[in-house]
Length: 230
Image 1 (cartoon, rainbow, N blue to C red):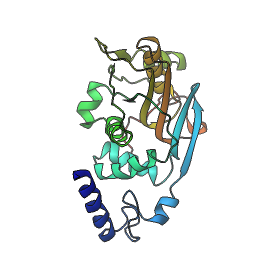
Image 2 (cartoon, rainbow, N blue to C red):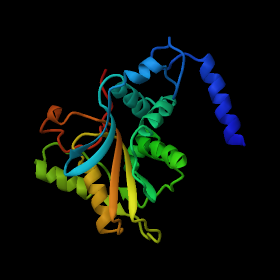
Image 3 (tube, helix red, strand yellow):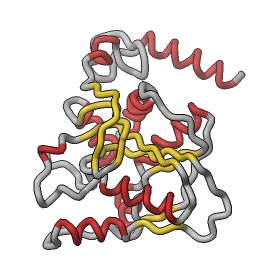
């Protein structure tokens, strides 16, 4: 009953509120007008990065790149409503649990929250699927000066299973914000399958950065962890 009342209140609020993107059109869904919704840089398909198949909602282009950066680095959490809606446009697999991409304690203290966890919680509620966080991420140090192989090995060593892990799931869905090469997703998936017994690991992201734009200095970074410089 409370959920129904809350939904109705949101609909009435939307009718009185302008689009959160253009600030002109009337809000239709997820806080934006129909025109802005249609003009998002949609991808809505699976891509392959680092031998991983990842379901992606959009290209990492304007305005999504700016919204994700503001959400992630400027604590503009009101963007989450639109970002949640984007993930729901994907043809999601049937899974038993949702696994947010973990971040290190240092990153968490610096940022104040894990953006992937916020997205995963909303998706968990929408799909009525439990949230599962069986893995922790060690400190994410600078990779400068390392070879490509060394950087890949460092990323793989960042993910460790939390002891003890009595709860196990066979089919899980990793949720992340932006994918570049897929190296972090691959490393997380490896721990889930080899150490925790998962048989099928799927992945979804809000956006994918074009692989051809990656430079040798950044080609093994899966998610964009450095604040943008305007």
